[in-house]
Length: 341
Ligand SMILES: Cc1ncc(C[n+]2csc(CCOP(=O)(O)OP(=O)(O)O)c2C)c(N)n1
Ligand SMILES: [Mg+2]
Image 1 (cartoon, protein in one colour):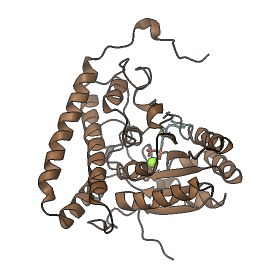
Image 2 (image 1 turned 90 degrees about the vertical axis):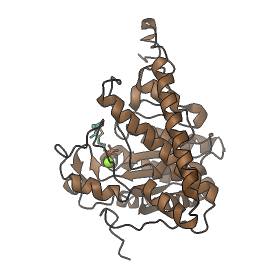
Image 3 (image 1 turned 180 degrees about the vertical axis):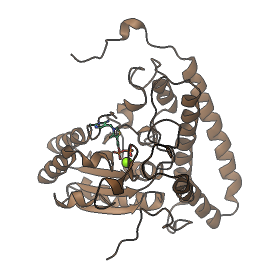
Image 4 (image 1 turned 135 degrees about the vertical axis):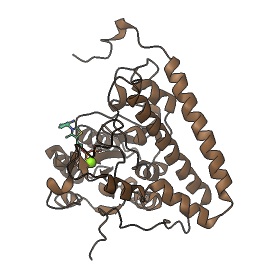
């Protein structure tokens, strides 16, 4: 069957289909996506204004993916991210204050202020790390999955990776090992069509990358990554299968990041095949906007509730930032603590 071209920003439906979904869960999706968006929009401004010393890789526009996946996970699962992982972490319910503190290099941060935006770790939430080395966490996630299986636990692993990361050979090896070991792992590819500044059409013979899973006979699904309900339903089914011992699966989510590769800029001047027109088209496919339209369609009186929620989130994000700003930096003698040599 011919697939709809999900790489075309104009190819989508709004409002999204929410029939049969619980209203409270939809509001939770709205709240979680909005919180992540507000946190990242604030980070963009603070980085631009010189408050943050290191780079921040922002995933604004991609929130529906971790927000759709996370409700089917629990804190004994093993979730791995990469360099663009604020959303992966926050969607698990992790502390916003600790994320801000880490980005600011404060000792109260997730990695005691030693890692910044790309080195996040929060074991209580089930988040076992993000690193800047493309695909570096993918074999670690397979290892965590094999370990869970050997221990006969019901935990699974999740590896979030980008379309660019799939171009690393280790991903092919990881999928193969996962399949042959029937490892309980879900690979989630966030195909935002770019690796750094280069469009996928300049790197690959097809814009869909789940075909890489075919080589290892890993079942795969391709979906609109800006439709939180579609992500939720597909991830829930895959996770149920994986927990019941059926081996790995891969979900490819087509999406787009509103910011450029790093920090607050849009990168239309350095991005190869990236234009303001595309960004605006993708903004009309915004996952938060589409869910909002659905919510208003099923319940007109919900607008007030959403407004109140937005006010509350603005306050929470602002106060988490202010708290982190006031936190201390680590003492100088702590600099080499935790360095493995
Ligand atoms: C092994 C390695 N090679 C190159 C880089 C430089 N680099 C950082 S991010 C990136 C592209 C990542 O693209 P993708 O996986 O699609 O993630 P996205 O940034 O789109 O979220 C590259 C090439 C790196 N960090 N690690
Ligand atoms: Mg990408």
